[in-house]
Each structure stands twice: as structure tokens, then as C-alpha cells.
Image (cartoon, rainbow, N blue to C red; front, side):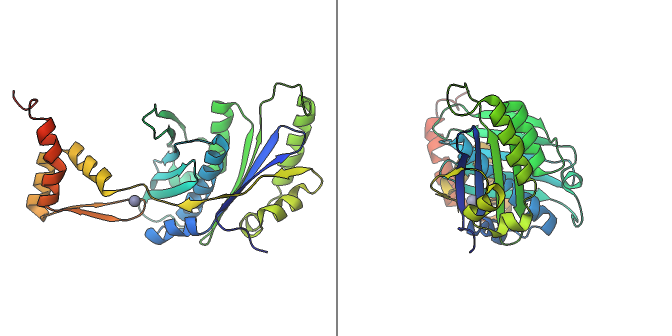
Amino acid sequence: MKPHPDSLQRFLFDQSHVRGELVHLDAAWRAVLERHDYPPALRTVMGELMAAATLLAAMLKLKGSLILQMQGQGPVTLLVVECDGELNVRATAKWQGELEGMSFTQMVGDGRFVITLDPRDGGKTYQSIVALDGDSVAEVLQHYMQRSEQLETRLWLAADAQGAAGLLLQQMPHEGGHGTSGEQDDDMWQRVTMLSDTVKPEELLGLPAEELIRRLFGEEDVRLFVAQHVAFRCTCSREKVGRMLKMLGRDEVDAVLAEKGEVAVNCEFCNHHYRFDRVDADQVFASEVVLGASDSVH
Ligand SMILES: [Zn+2]
């Protein structure tokens, strides 16, 4: 049996406040790899961050999108993964030079970890910036969750050229009154995290969620929820690129047009090429001319 492709499985340890999720990315992950030629060392980190982003997005049950950004000071200067509430995911990275044999810490150096929650409905965007604290993607996220959400969260992540996968466990806050006591929950938490520490990357990548849960937590009563589908999807569009050109300003765009005859913009996530010639540029700025007419009188 192989894992269900591109799926996220939520589960709960019965009669406790410990919950979990398993994710397996296949076509969604390969769609990222097909669009850029990432070095193997970077590929592993990106796949892990992509698995982590889907696990967190699913756990937060958000309506908008979650953006995880690692801004490094090493040869890897940027790692970005965006995942929305429907579990549509995209990712990209920027790096320079040779990364072969480098650890996570060597690749990103001292950097920043930026978490953005964009409600996508015009509501307020929430952003948190912390130091890149940890020797792996899982550690950075665990530290962040502990500090910001005050929730004990553990992650186990793996990625190769074919797939990316992850396991998340979290101790939910509880007011008491039903289910187990805090002490029983702590025992459960100790037990299931110790069991999860035995998981191997090849098991995360190669086993179906139900089988992995059975292997790791065979002694526990685990309740499984309906699996959710995960897909690669880029949210770029010609309209958005047009808005970006407007922000850049007419002079800047005209200068590029004069030099190159067109403005070419490449989406870093999906590698889609957008081209704007002079006629297109006139269209982009047409609305601004009307709107800005009164402002232009100095
Ligand atoms: Zn795109």
C-alpha cells in the first residue's frame, strides 16, 4: 500500500487533548520542483517547509492564507511557502552558490522567520517576525509555536525528489470538565511524542497515514477524520502583475520599454512569464491617468 497522494489526515487521541495530522505531498510537491532546478540540499528544506505549512494551515483552519518565510543570511536568502485554507500550496526559494553537503543552519545562517496570516478578504493582515531559532525546519517551527501560541507542538518532516511528508502532534489547551485530566494528558503527550521520535523519513514518505498511525500508536485509541486534498496552485495573474507595474510607476516602466521593447515579469512561484508591450502598458496606466488627473495639477 502506498500513501494517499496529496492528502492531509487529521486525527485525535480519544479521550485526550492531544491531536495530530499527517500530510503527504506528491504532485503538489513535484509541481514546485518542475518549475525550478533546486539543488538537492535546498530541495529537502523546501519540501519540509511545504509539508509544515500545510500542517499548520490545516490546524489553524484559516480562511485566508498562511505564508511562512525564512529570510536567511547564508547562501539561501529566501524560502517561501504559502498555503491557504483549502490547502492550495505554492513555494519558491532564492539562493546563490554551491549548497552541497550543507546543513540547514549553514544554508540559512542567522536569519529571520516571518509568519504572515493574510485573511484575503480585505481584513487585517497579521505578521510575526522572529529569529530563525533552530537547526531544522521542524525546530524553528516548534520554537515559534511554543512561544507565540503557547501550545506544545512537535513536527517530524521529510522530503525527497518524489514527495514531502510530515507529522504534527499538538497538545490542545483544555479547561477541564470532560475527557482526561491535565496529568493524564501529559502522560499521553510524553508517550506519543516518544513513539513519534522513532519515525524514520522513509516511513513518513512511504506509508499510508492509517498504517503509519497504526504502527506508531497501535496501543492508543485514535480517531481519524476525513482526509483533505492538497494541491499546488499559484495565485499570480496578469492583473496582479499589472498592479505591480503601476506601483513601480510610469517612468520606470517607460524606461524598460525604451530599452527592451517590453516589460517581462516572471512569477517566482510558478515560473509563468508575463509580457507587457507598450500597448499593454498604456492599458495598465490608463485607469490611473483618469483617477490621478486632479492630483497631477501642481
Ligand atoms: Zn505564479
